[in-house]
View 1 (cartoon, rainbow, N blue to C red):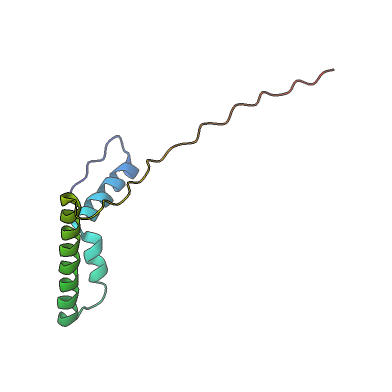
View 2: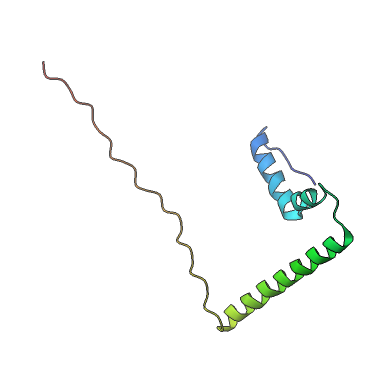
Length: 93
């Protein structure tokens, strides 16, 4: 995996690297390898993952076909308007 660092901007390069690693599943694999997983547990986990994926796919297909109502869409984030500037009071002498 390779990330280009532009203009010595290390923070941006780290963000890009983390995103790439997340997509590749590196963090998930590291978490799984922290401790030993028995073959029977691995088999059960993989089966449950497959069932979860199949249900999600079936739910999306049913929504596309109109058999299920689509979930409500989230409202986009709106920024509050900035506060009006307060002018400094001039003391009367």
